[in-house]
Image (cartoon, rainbow, N blue to C red):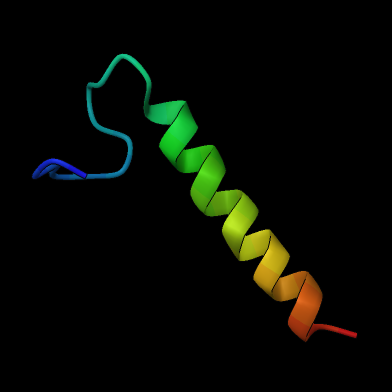
Length: 34
């Protein structure tokens, strides 16, 4: 959250952000889905 160009840039720990976003999207899809 500090002026990054992409979610998976050349950072040492891009997985945390990616996994968090994926989990959030998964949760939303699960709660809105049947």
